[in-house]
Image (cartoon, rainbow, N blue to C red; front, side, top):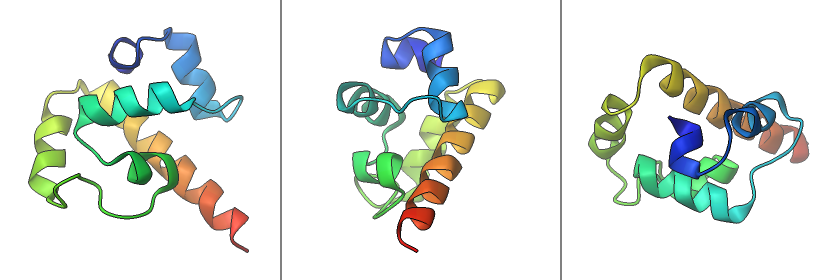
Length: 89
């Protein structure tokens, strides 16, 4: 489902998660819009998760995902946050 939302192939999404390559801005924007989350939060792990700053919007968006896709979003967010924290050391 994440691949469909981002209009990319499933192997591309797996590449993002494995760290093989990053998502470009166009795909990050598509995914952020589909998930109703802020682009900066998705890409960098900074700021508010939702554009409105409300967790209920994120929970609603997460409810639309299958469990496997929700796990992928969680892994992607954690990887991005980890990469960000390593870069700031």
